[in-house]
Amino acid sequence: MKKILVTGGAGFIGTNFVYYITAKGYNAVVLDKLTYAGGKDNLEPLIAEGKVKLIHGDICDADIVKSSLNGVEEVIHFAAESHNTRSETDPDLFYRTNVEGTRNMLEESFRAGVKKFIHISTDEVYGSIVNGYFAEDDKKQGDSQATSAYSKSKSQADDIAMEFGKNYPVIVLRPTNNFGPWQYPEKALPRWISNILLGDKIPLWGEGLQVRDWLFAPLTAECLEFLLQKGVPGNAYNVAANHNPEITNKTAAQWLCKILGVSIEEYIEYIPDPRPNHDFRYALNVQKLTKLGFKPANDPFKQFEDTVEWYQQNEQWWKKRKDEAESIYK
Ligand code: NAD
Ligand code: TDX
Image (cartoon, rainbow, N blue to C red; front, side):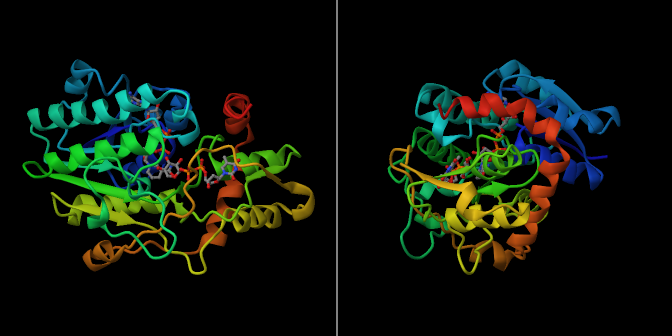
């Protein structure tokens, strides 16, 4: 049985990936610091079945990384501080985890002879674009396109991974905004769904006209499995849903109201935008990945419905996290 190391596998996309890949017959070693965003509870059923071994540790700690790599040929590196809002108050933590942690993972992985390393970057490394789409080569060296401490740290980490990719089998994946089960309720969609379930309003920042390319997290997992098999080392790939028409934050919020059967007028409120340099629109050209043979299934309303259903059925999961998540907006 193949054994894969998944850093940050107790977080949102990581958990979705671990469920997906263990169902395909892999065993996973998850290395995770279990920060506020990581939940051992996410993985408990898989740990009980012996499909996942959870190592509680920091990607910046070379010894822990070394021992996590024992018997591993493939690494999927999700671990990061992932929230823009939090990066406004603690940029140093974002630099340490996202930049130094990524460098440490790459160094130790290739010292241990890893055969494939996929680094999860983000669409935010390109910054915002008013019209058109960013292709992979549009990323400039350095972090000048990125606008927050989070996106700057991810941009630097992306450069380091690409640099390693000149000599080692590294692939960089740049996904758009993910959503789905196990997403921490600080992020827009789970925040809004849980607010409505509690009888509270959705706070839309500014006019709510910002555009995000919502990608269902199980599809990111599918894409990663595809890249494990077909991805060409040394390359970066964009992945996005490319919705047509595009989905503004306002539309996303209205869909959630519709799915949950509440009044749009009563449940959506517009508040002054609290985010400095709020990126207006993310949009990616995905031709490179499409040509290689991968295209995510695009059915956003259905994927929103499935996500809402998960939060309805897993109230205990998000209720434990809700107060901490809301505290960052006070
Ligand atoms: P998340 O915040 O839900 O999970 C991050 C995980 O990393 C948590 O389990 C946390 O405990 C762990 N972690 C944090 N610091 C660590 C450290 N020093 N050592 C070990 N583990 C540590 O994040 P997510 O939304 O699942 O994002 C996963 C990756 O995908 C990140 O690299 C993020 O930048 C990228 N990404 C996310 C999105 C999105 O929409 N969520 C979109 C594009 C890219
Ligand atoms: O209450 C809210 N109201 C609101 O209008 C919240 C929480 C957000 N928003 C807006 C801000 C953004 O335009 O919704 C949009 C999405 O916000 P976030 O969920 O905070 O995500 P974003 O900042 O777009 O970043 C996400 O996508 C790229 C992930 O958090 C990153 O990890 C990923 O790299």
